[in-house]
Image (cartoon, helix red, strand yellow):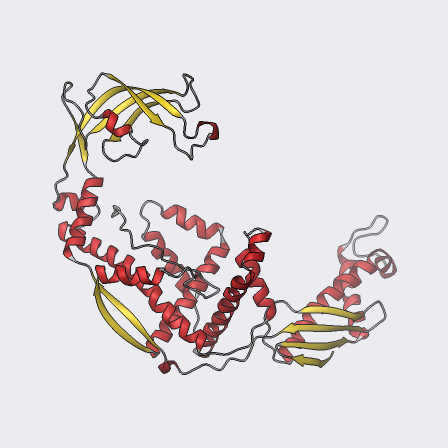
Length: 457
């Protein structure tokens, strides 16, 4: 095999590759010999088909098969010999081929740029440590207690008030006619939550067990049946029960029901959960500060094919007019992502960073443990979606690179409370941009952290 550099311009390298016809012919003979042992043709015993018959029957397809394999193997070898770091799939341009001829082709390669990394000690970023105030923890604790309160039956003649739970069966009509979903049984509404229809709760105030109430309401604009959207509806509600809220006592027993050891442990869990949610947002801010400086302090050529691929990824769900309208901004975003991705990978390679399959397995196990009751679903998701595991591995690799960079730059630690944190997050969210510019992961934080219910173990 003969390999020559035809041209080098920017990041594009063109190689000329010539594969001797004798080499190709030898590969063809090997494949025909293999077929001779495998094929069964009428009139011949297995393994006894003459070479001439094999050649006649399979010659053309064998030649195509061999050429395809030779192209893959020799192009890989050519790239390796010339020590080229490719960006994307090379393009092959056949110049000469055919039985009895040398194989001559050009290999057009977009190469990755050589990146000179800037010293990390030049970079500065703020790192935030948040203190969760006791009043925030107590507020969340009371929310959890309220969400888990029970209801006790009221006396038959007691009227429903705001905060009570009303249980009823209903039959509804629009313009005097029934419709799909116009009947329901055992519906439970906590008055004052307004979770059913606008104005519905207020009309149930004063109702008693056993009576029938006529409720006027308007079906929602986003009703599944478009013809029913915004329609005035009459609900005939038969009240089957009225219950009063039984305020949950916040004590060790309640904490155990929530999966904690005791009330102190539950408060600690709540504090960690809220702190974690704020930290995710604040870490995004620190990360953006770092990425902005990395992008600003490195000048590199970018492979056009990678930019085009990224633009396609960004715009794949957009209509043609939207693509045209935002062409410049999407191109700018694509260039930014590719640039940062290449620089971060260079940091990773230079420092020999890797993510092992064991590390991925451990991370998946963490996710499984963090979703009580949904362990099987999470495990099956990764088992059935190999790309999900690969994507997770990419995110973990990027995080490892960022953590390395953090350990080497000037990090200024600021201790803040939740009020300060929300101001910082709000300021960060003002620009309508993609905060995580890396091509591997995209992460935005568009509102202040929302606390979740503490799940039972």
